[in-house]
Amino acid sequence: MDSLFTRDLAPLLEHEFVTQWDCYDKKYTPLNGALMHFYKHSPYLCEAFHIISTSPPPRPGTTDWGSSLYLKMWRRLVHEGIQPFKILPFCFSDGRSCRLDNRLPDPFKKDPKRWGEGRLNGGDRTGLAEGGELDVALGNVFSVHLHNQWEKAFPTGGWVERLLLNRYDSRLSRWKRSEVPDDGPPPSE
Image 1: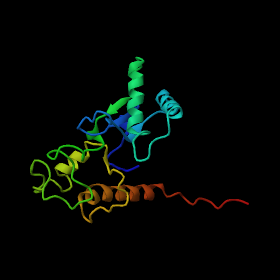
Image 2: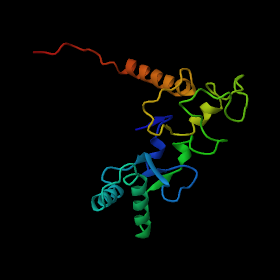
Image 3: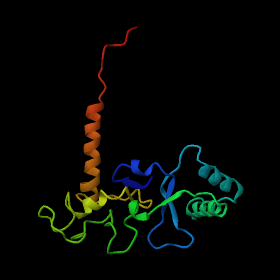
Image 4: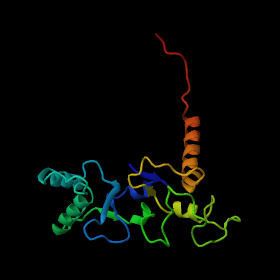
């Protein structure tokens, strides 16, 4: 998985879905599997595996068993009059893949000088501080898609570290402290 979760996915999990690729409505690659959800024994998964088993192997470097597969499956379902899986709008999982004026900042670059509309938030005019416009935006999406860039480092002190990673660490620390098992009595022999 190449995404950083920004909040709980529970509100999405009542539906089976894949995500929209981006806001540009690409004709042949409109769907993305970076964030998807299907139930165990889903008829959609059965259809996907049927398509895979009856199709030629994927061509190297393509989305044959990714975006192209989801589109083929979605079209088959619609053609047969079967309610297809949902398509989660890209902005909930890939908000850095759209227009320059409304995208999330690049997580691998140093913070921009400012982000957002410049509304004052606790004295911060940049929009990048905790509680600022970017922080609010991150609370309105479910993840930040990193696009297979696992090896890249996040800038020290940047928005990813400040608004996401430090919070993950804090939550994990609290969880570990509360989940430390009681040693209890020694096992009897």
